[in-house]
Image (cartoon, rainbow, N blue to C red; front, side):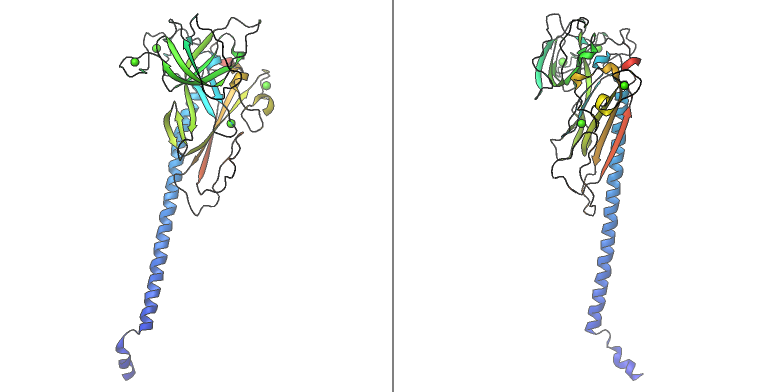
Amino acid sequence: MSRRNTNRAGFTLIELMLAMTLLSIVVIMTLDSLTRQQKTSIVTEQIVEVQQNVRAVSSLVEREIRMAGFMVPNAVGVCGIDSTTAPDQLFLSETEPIVPDDERAGTLGARLSSTQNWTPTWSGTPATPLNLTLNLDSTTTDLDGDGNFFYDNDGNGTAEADFRVNGGFILGDLANPHRGTVCGTVTAASSTQITVAVIGGQLAALVTSDAEEEIVLVPAAHYRVNTGFSTGRLERNQDLLAQGIDDLQISYFFDVDDDGVIDSAAAEEPGTAGGAAYNPANWDNETLKEIRFSLVVRTRATDQNFGNGGFITFENRVAPVGSGNDGFRRRVIVGAVRPRNIGNSGSI
Ligand SMILES: [Ca+2]
Ligand SMILES: [Ca+2]
Ligand SMILES: [Ca+2]
Ligand SMILES: [Ca+2]
């Protein structure tokens, strides 16, 4: 009894310190677990966000590939710039400025005026965007002949062209699609002239067996990854579609020999890992069967606990030198689409 009384003094200093230490360990552990849970939920959130963005974007790209060549000549349905050290670029003829019930289906496109010679001064793919001002035929500068121009390019309240400044364009020879394709961006457009920056492609010289050339120009949706930002931006006609895009790679599947089969990568699959680089100057859109695109997307922030982040290579893309783990989580989405309006099924 008395012993119990002598012990009534309460906690000793040592006991108190021990209790405090235990308590702080518990607090630290709880906080740590909470932080970890929060981090996990942020990571999950970011991955979900990334997947949703890319799903929306990829369905837009798929739809546009499917519609490429709609109402316009095969020659100007598709064009692109292939790279092995940077994202690829894709041009798809745009259907927005075109009225579907126009009777001239399959022939739409702005023609060059009779005084405008098509005498390109470059060979192969221009090293830097090359500016060209083209005089247009007054009867075809209104693409669909509906009497209305679509875009107000100088912001004066009056629309002056079915071509949009900063939008893409595709140029080809309607009468001889085997001559190849040229593409780039529109820098100025009026009812009589269009100024373009050529990024890629070329038309082969006319040979005697060719039909009389009919150069046409159509507006195109231009997809590219703008890497001039801390996080890659996927742009369509220079408008932002999605951020955090590391790469866009495009592959093309042709049936050049028309045997009903896409043959070896080297022969008929430019842009793929085993195929040659795609150069729009060398391909006839009339034999195009399928386009495959790959988008590599990453989360907004790094995850320090993730040890497996790093550049993902697809198709013929090679990883940048020295690209190791950077802590970003990535997702890849791949879509393969058969253009409905190009090739044998096409309108011309
Ligand atoms: Ca490529
Ligand atoms: Ca129009
Ligand atoms: Ca205007
Ligand atoms: Ca074949």
